[in-house]
Image (cartoon, rainbow, N blue to C red; front, top):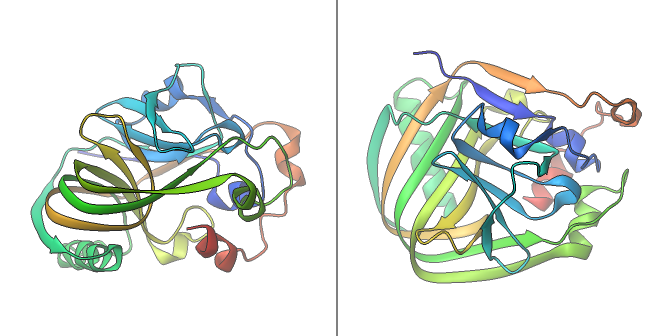
Length: 237
């Protein structure tokens, strides 16, 4: 079964401040049922799960977005869960990333993309989201300096949804694992800085095809996408 990663724009374009809508949330959901991203003017964090598109606002409160909501950046795929395993007593995000990487390496997957979902009990989730900031050519780092809010969820059931991109795709997306959280009752969520898992059921799919939908408007051509933004992207991650 051929699965594909469907991506809207590039992380490098978002990092440089291109936050205009490229497609709608409704169009995005036609391409995948699991993934993450953000919304027009970086208005909150996106979690796509079970074919629904959720927004976590700057307080960590979650809602389903209207179909016409604009999407400047996202990565989604269909989740089949071809590889499944359990994680227990994972104290932090680095431990989780290391374990996920070890599992995909066992299946010769380090140079491929992956989609992941982890359902379970989380001891602590250190997350963030942001308010919208209408501006162009202001970097994501500077934007988040004005709009980002951090919050912590403790002893909570829910899911991590994420993507893995190999190192050579740096700039298209973030190399390694990028994770967002959504609570079981779909009321809380955000971009994950750190997380500890009591126990979690993991579903992962290896993906070897990608479709990138680039912005069509002329303004996209005014961004210098060849500059190295690795450090800047790491700092907002």
